Amino acid sequence: MTFPDSPIFLPDEAATVACGGRLAQELRNGDVLALTGGLGAGKTHLTKGIVHGLGCHADVSSPTFSLVHEYQGGTLSVYHFDWYRLEGEEELPGIGWQDYLDADGVCIVEWADRFPAALPRGTHWMALETLPEGGRSLRMIPAPEGAL
Ligand SMILES: Nc1ncnc2c1ncn2[C@@H]1O[C@H](COP(=O)(O)OP(=O)(O)OP(=O)(O)O)[C@@H](O)[C@H]1O
Ligand SMILES: [Mg+2]
Image 1: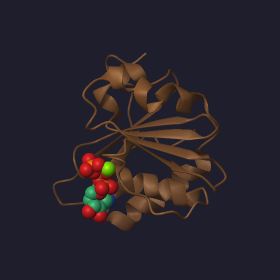
Image 2: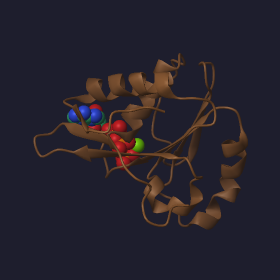
Image 3: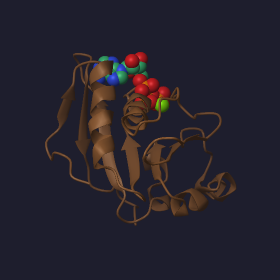
Image 4: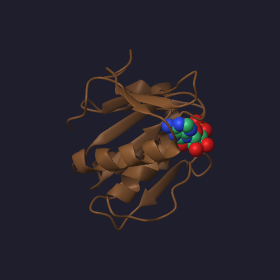
């Protein structure tokens, strides 16, 4: 996946969704996207842009309670995770994490930095940040400490 090295400024929600749409064109089967950034940083809206950009026009919401949402019907299937409420990494087998990694499609993980060692090598790490003036920034980041 090629993506600019410098941070991208996202002035509003629509810009976050549009950026996800551009990102969708870069994704390939088997890609894993690890999203970091605090509460409300825009992780779900970026994912929404990706899902819609792949041609699936389902509603996209945070899989906070269901832990994973599957979006089919686009050019790639998307498996969307949120690890905010997971107690520990040992819960991942129970949600079928490895099966999703092995499946056709792309995996997108909100709060991926909670369990960096669970992400495979080659994962694309991205950070969203809320800016003091209200918009967001998005940049590629190196895999955090503890990642494979
Ligand atoms: N670039 C932006 N500028 C301003 N507001 C934005 C931007 N992108 C998204 N938002 C707003 O931020 C709020 C949170 O967005 P979103 O739910 O996508 O964040 P999140 O990172 O998934 O949050 P959570 O950690 O709760 O899962 C929404 O109200 C959304 O409209
Ligand atoms: Mg979210």
